[in-house]
Amino acid sequence: MKLSDFDFDLPEALIATRPAVPRTSARLLVADGPVLHDKVVTDLPDWLRAGDRLVLNDTRVIPARLTGARHRDSAQGPVQARIEITLLEPRSDGTWAALIKPLKKLKVGEDVVFSPDLRATLIGTADGQGHLQFNCAGDDFDAALNAAGAMPLPPYIAAKRPADAQDLTDYQTVFARNLGAVAAPTASLHFDDALLQTLADKGVTFSHVTLHVGAGTFLPVKVDDIADHKMHSEWGKVSAQAAAEIAATKAAGGRVIPVGTTALRLVETAARGGTIKAWEGDTDIFITPGFTFNVADALMTNFHLPKSTLMMLVAALMGQEAIKTLYAHAISSNYRFFSYGDASLLIPEARKLA
Image (cartoon, rainbow, N blue to C red; front, top):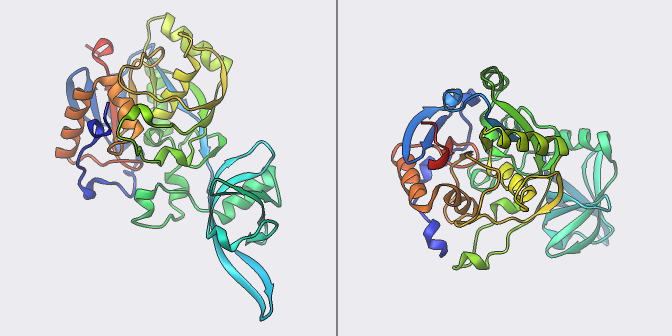
């Protein structure tokens, strides 16, 4: 398959820079098999039934964008340079991989000071990234980072406006628990506690999994033949409890519906053997048309970038022609796109409500 098979023209005005307020007032395009319905997120309970299970990614986004100063003595006296850092992921040795701008102005062994409570030492570089050792860890690190950092908004939002205090709430799910993501599982941003309770009252159940969404989720596909694309990897965990819950729902004939492509990629990774099992590690699963889904019966997701791996994933679930029709409808109906945009509920023909 060619990259051009997953392209479309998106008007710039449809890229959302702020979320709907309240969260649940976002629009929801339901694809019940081939039939499209224009709804809002508060209508979601009408499309689910008792015995269905939503799989929620409980990763927590860290305020990963930091601005600090590097201090150095020179022949002319003390000098400093502004350094911008985006944290990418924690490493097994306790350091952090990060993008550093400008990397050439920072030497190994030098410190960057972000606040009175937070500083980092560059201990090495590799593949255009820096490896940073922070002066604190655990709860102290979390507190200092929350005070000094800004949310790592996606590039298509950051190009239009800087992150602000509102993003600390807007770009975080209400069930976020486990720190480590540098991008939000954005379909989950549409939920609030009241909607979750309404679904529970209807008999919909929930399983929590963790996939720490990395900056690689925004990397463009640059090869013409998608089979040549190298997928980025992200750390995830499906607990034994979550795997057992999902397996029980499947056995009882209920539908398992991941909320977001991150949750879907993770549970399908954990079910590569045919049935879901507890799993933990780095996944680079690349879901394209022809993929056999062992877990997901449907998917709630936002609208994705042209020529992205996520477009390939939704095409694998619904079929390429169905997705082309759905996206054409979304554009003509002025749905809002990407991370802060509207949502879709994708129910393949075999699992449609009727």
